[in-house]
Length: 113
Length: 113
Image (cartoon, rainbow over all chains, first blue to last red; front, top):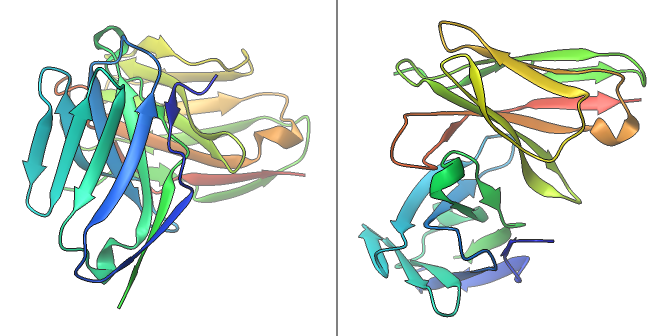
């Protein structure tokens, strides 16, 4: 059973526009959510996180939104830049297994010039 | 600060053999987690070590084991290798808090023939 799902395997966005990546989860015990970015031949890099007590967290061009009732989170990147082209993973953890991350399958984001 | 290092970067083994992978965490990080990444299953949590103790474990058979040393360096071992063990093995280190914010190494690409 896939507890964290990213239904879009790929997304293509024009440079300068907004990129929106989506993620759904099924386990209501999850209380911390994260986004990671991965370039080829490198390990994932932490981008931004959000606790379940919040519904929005912003860091520069990156904003994560959490809708607990819908068990849905999204990552907004504004404005999108060519260097943002990568695979983005959504991940979740619960306070019992804090460092045990459950990852989605990833979305490949391509920013077109 | 130096990042997470993993050795070796690439490894080719034969079915039935065993393998040991090594991970050196970021200085000051006491938690080390291991993940397996495959095209079919994505990123899956193997186990986490903290202060030389296994704190969390994923759903992998007992052939997968690990340990952590007093300097926080960690090793994982896979015995009786199967073809399906071919994967990218990622190590991540973290502070205790915040939960889930992990720093990944570049991974060890294991190929089992």
